Length: 201
Length: 330
Image (cartoon, rainbow over all chains, first blue to last red; front, top):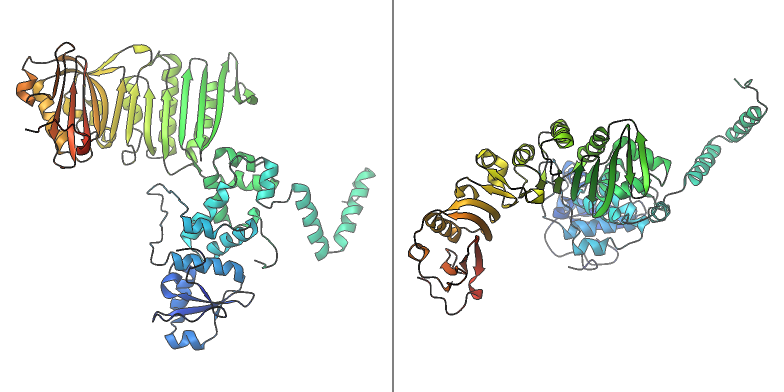
């Protein structure tokens, strides 16, 4: 099955599936709605527990508001649900250390994750948040594979990492935004140090 | 997480970072430490697990070479004993120098690697120099076995390749997890043959459950039955009899996991005519004293081929399609 044909449905884009299975409705933080089969939801420990706790009937899933997933945007959630639909019914791997962990990336997953690195990181974050073990495994493997043969500068670019200087500057800016006096205090401190005194203390 | 900003690697949850670092390999992990302070701190504190595809340790009286293949990336370090000091070199870079004895430095490096091993080691290769039980070798092996004991119940290795003595092979094999060990290779350097008379080695669960054996430089004065269970085998046995060959033929033709075995021998124990025991050969080269046979297997898609020569015989399970048309099975 191709990535494009995975049975995740944006309600405004496709018809409601005719199967008599229960389809839950979820809403991303940017108000995109998705219908996801019961079986696909089982790939996510978090969502599975949530829907079990809600105890919705088939009428409820149609009539009640969509279940909000506030931390994940529509673009990411679509990938998550496409993955869950494709892998529905598959056993969830258990990593208890008793057998060596070998992660292979299936063709479908490789195509699904052929996305920009920023979105890939969001997908990992979502897989972790929703506790989708195998999606987390394959997406982390994909990110790990990117490190092969790279220099520190290349790794910084690939992994969207700031340099220490940029990081410091960002932290300073964030601190200043919170407390405008902080910069002045820091400058005052530096000035006193330059003057050689420890009267600051 | 905001829907507008792109997260970076360092924004990933700890579980995901550990998972990612568990796949990047030792070399990339160390490169990542150079990327930023935050990453360096995370890696140093969390000490992520690494995958070890192979680990080769080569010992000489004054140095140890450690070659690591982790997530398909190779790294190499050499630790040298320089009289009163020790220095370690990785590539062209000197990575440490001091007065710590070179075997202690070696053990520190090995401990760092083995304690962070994730899953199982594809291949562990240990080359001890030809002095075997003397000097540095003895000290190294004592320390290494102690290290293995300290880092866990038993080391998970798929393949062990030891160049050393029989007792050393026994000591090392005993420290490996029998559930994961598939292939055993033991050899001796410089053609100094060693005879193995007792079956202590064969009593090990690691020996019994392995699927492949390859030995070089040893000759075994033990019952040939100790080798029956291997799907692929190459070894040297002191004596073999025609009846044992017939027994091997029965075992191998009924086995589903047998692939091939090459058995070197020193003496044919009795003078019984092999033709009487095994039937008429398919080929008989009187000049070179070489014969071949084909036998039926329990699985009709396969046949068992036997080559018998002056110094070795070889059984191979072959697809029935590869059997010459002229062969008639008795």
